[in-house]
Every structure is written in C-alpha cells, then in structure tokens.
Image (tube, rainbow, N blue to C red; front, side, top):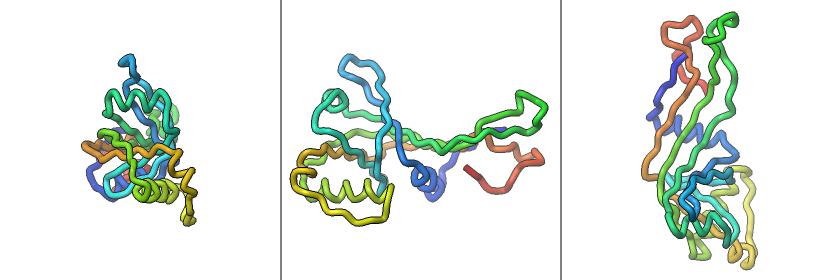
Length: 167
C-alpha cells in the first residue's frame, strides 16, 4: 500500500466536498497549538468559517492570523493479505490548506459567506435576520498553499490495484 500525492483540482474539490467538518489549527495566545473542528463552506479557493464574535480563537487569530485547515475523508481499513499484519492500512484522503484569516465585516459579504457555508450541507436557500448576521463572526481564508494525499492505495504491482484513485 502506498500514499499518492494528488494535484488534479477536481479530485481535491471532491475530497473537500465529502466532508462535513474541517479541523483548523492555530496558535493560541500563549503560542501553543490549538486544533478545533468547525463547519465550513468552500468556493473558488476560499474557505469560509463562522463563530461567535469573541472567544479564545478570535483572540488568537487577532494575534496571529495564520491558519492550517485539514479535511479528511472517512477512513476505511484495507489490507493486501488478510493474514499479514503489516499489509493492513487505513485508506482515505486528506487535504491540508494554509492561509490567513480575514474577518469579514461587510454585511452583504457575510450573507454570501453564510450561504456558501450552508450549501456545504443543504441546497436550501435561507434568509438571515440582521441581528443574526451582525452577531456572527465570518472567517474568510484564501488558500495560499494546498497539499493533498490519498493513502492506503494498493501498489501498482498489487493484484488489488485499480487504475483510478478511490477514497
């Protein structure tokens, strides 16, 4: 079993679309790593997140806006030979994005971002009250770098090898 680097944009977007949460990594105000799961939206190389207006994450990002966002498909156990322990692997795919958080303050842009987030979960159209939009913090992250891997792929010489990536 091997790990394959993916560069095809449609495959990267397929991996992101399969997720219902992402994990964000930031540095807290004391410089310690901090990772939390969040809901998200994705469109045109921008990841949108939302949170309360205040809190530890907001303080940390005001201090250091750098962020790492990770997506991972549901892992599955696979093996090349059921009787050989070292042939077992976890199969799945991950996308790791890096960028800087910008807090969106414009009301109409916040509504657009909230709609992008909701499209990740449902195709319904929503309207938002003014207080609801004003009380939410919208994070906008333009992707500066991205790396994508599919892991647990059968080796090309394996009898289980398929000509296309599955995750």
